[in-house]
Image (tube, rainbow, N blue to C red; front, top):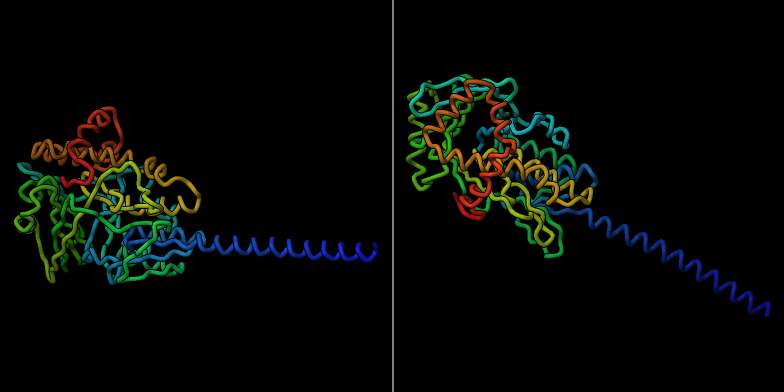
Length: 388
């Protein structure tokens, strides 16, 4: 009996040791799975995709970005665009810092400029806070795209250029692949100049049908473009009209000009999560319907996608709370803008010049009883997945 007791006691000790090893192995196995889950693939190295990668990397995730072009900003020539600053009370540069994005790119505040509309003299506008921040786009030094790339790489993000992502149906992926179709197009030039820093915008259907043209100059470089929402097949005609207009109306010294083109896409979907894929930026239709100021939405949606992974929050709930109201309001704004033509353009120009244009824009990007009434009409006018 004592001998049997010793044997049984020995077996019990072995069993306990074996269970401890199983427990430790289970922890190790769970850790391996956890590490695998912390590898996130992102399609597209635009502002939305790179923002998602930066935020994920700062929270310990291993982000890998697939970009089909040879570098960031390949879809954009190196030119100036506006990062809008009117749709919320918080300055966009403060908001960027709040979500973990450093300002390591050209980001110059513009408080006003000149505005043109048919049948009236040009008007001066000036705001108490920046209406927008001038940023450079493309692969050149100082561009938003290059700045975000540098931030991502410094955090250990792997960016695979000239590579398309080929995810499995079970793999979680953030999709920031850009516009699916063209709801508007832009045709313009970048150039060197001796003109002083300035900003000008033109509302005129002979130059930019249902859109606008703009001139931006900063530190010896300039961008002039027409943004067209209608009759896009006659892009060359409106591009030529835009150049002729600025040459006739302003001192227009340009050298080393380079042509560029682009497009934008917008729609409001019921969900932006399909088969483990989270859609961000213009791939999700997140774009300003009125004038195409989409960089803010791209960056914020990239942050929200990353935050949904980090915190476990529902991505659809996040973007519907933060972005959907302003998207719907901008849709109604687009509907009204197209309805009133030159009369509306003159009204807008005078309102911008009369008071603070930033305050006027902020009010008109807020929801209201009238705009809620007009929303179903505007939605029926601009069907999801169709061009304007």
